[in-house]
Image (cartoon, rainbow, N blue to C red; front, side):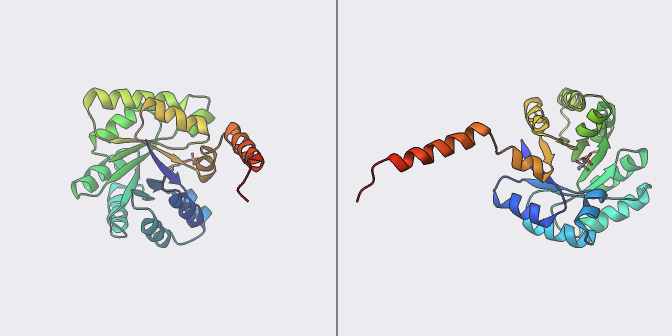
Length: 216
Ligand code: E4P
């Protein structure tokens, strides 16, 4: 499974990229606001650090506007993927951008039916939001499982990008289901390296190493 970082904060992206384990990046208007810098500039810098797909989100509500924004984003770097929302206008924009050879990530997906429409519109990626579904007492991962089944049934090549990840269980569940990608907040990315027994094991080995006779 590919691991993306869900952030527009450059320090997090640089640290993540330095591990050699980050395959791409997703951003959205809320993450751009947190980063506190002009969006296009930030996207350009992210694309110079991350060689894999970098998602840039449109804010228009009509297809025409989304296509315009998408074309402009695609000029920033080759690895830009344009995010459009899961609406009828978004699907029109997805089809038009895809025809122009611009990759599209359909965002704000909360059901497998929506994911079916995204795939039929030629989306490169689809983003089911698991955390936000969990927040309203649904099981977000069930939607991911259903999308996987639908896509397998019809051999859709649209990649399933698990978004709105809140914890390490979401990451493991995404991998068990066979999602193509999980996009992680930096804090969750840090956590998946860790296990208390790894820390305890390192501590013990280092203590015991001190007891090993050394050459004088
Ligand atoms: C990423 O593409 C999504 O926009 C993001 O994961 C949404 O996460 P949130 O539900 O924590 O805002």
